[in-house]
Image (cartoon, chains in turn orange, yellow):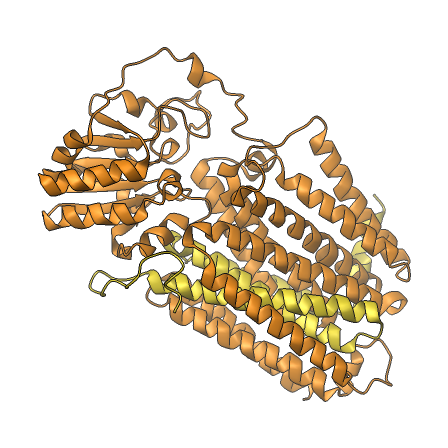
Length: 478
Length: 119
């Protein structure tokens, strides 16, 4: 296959990726979009296989002057095909088995594998090109591939361990951590420059990889569980490591795909930070939720009205419109299916039910929507913050399930509060508020929530799933 | 800080300025396309991003084929396996999620239990 034909096919694949992502703009076209991206990937991989099999002159150009090459050996081809078969089997099993509640871990794991693949390919490139390579390209291999890919792998595995509960999700901080991180990163970059000045010494590239791995672990250690949505989004941006490899191999589809995924990661990070009204630097280095803000414990005891499921069921059964606010507590309690049952019951009584999904609900961007879609809630009922906030004033009941900070009115009113300015769901504007909560403990930010003490608020303490099941049977009975 | 200008000069003298051009333009296209994706679909967006990240497979195949030493070849072939997990796992799990987003009039899917709806 000639290089021109290959480039043309890579262009087609790039366009399919762009169209595929474009179709993600709505749930009705998103599946088609995914299929377009799959076709793009098949074309790109097929083209790569065809061009290496042909072993022609243009491929030889990539060989830095070694013109004796007549194509890969049969053994090499078999090894590549076997590796692809192995990867296909593993990916297939992962994708089929993973539970929707475990999607953040799945995405973290795939971020990590992508990063590791980019790092290893880049080390292989460094070995291959060695001293022949141009200075700039050597540097791109090191910084873009090895350091970015290696750090992504280590940080993603750290995030995976935290999400999976293999290690505690609390921020891990020690004195001089930031300085150590900066030093590790600086040394990794310095190793790349040393490799640039002496590309025959592959040891520098390996050193850069090891330093990047250490940096990645320490980078994610101080970030608490509640900030994982931002970390996952940001690690998505490291897809640009693929662009670095594309730059070396003069392969457009690698460059385009890496850039697209990088852009996606940056946009999602910005959206997540905005939803928490915090800067990216604050999330990454702030170690939020370490308990510095002792405001909650110093607050004088206020009276909270605890109610039974019977009271709440009467209120719900007689309402005309109910807005349900699901939080991470709902996912933890695996209560999404019971919520759907309650929704169906209320709808049979002609109650209008909607869901208000805050951008940071769940452990990754959009996670809550997936969980509710899984329990058959139609997507038209899932409203985002901008859509739902004007509707609270006319709602009879706001039902808060396992959420806290995202409905805390302090964010609107109290300039001294750490969450001041964070966009919230206006649950306090509904006629009545029912809050399902495990205990009166404050949210991850350690901030007291005045909504709990409001006269129109009914607090139902206990496990979200059990309380919801009690609500379901009470509504049925009434 | 005299290193900075020399690095810039090196980059400019590099043989692949075309690659840089493609990268910058594709980033802008990415921003325009991705910002239209609603929050509803952000999780599938991230998993399809994982799959597209798996494009590193193309690089791994090429490097694996042209590799001359055993170390190079081994690294590249391991990368082939890792990248394939991303491609296959990412696309499949995205499809599994997107299948779940239904309209009001669509019939509910059977077997809502987690992990059983992949077929």
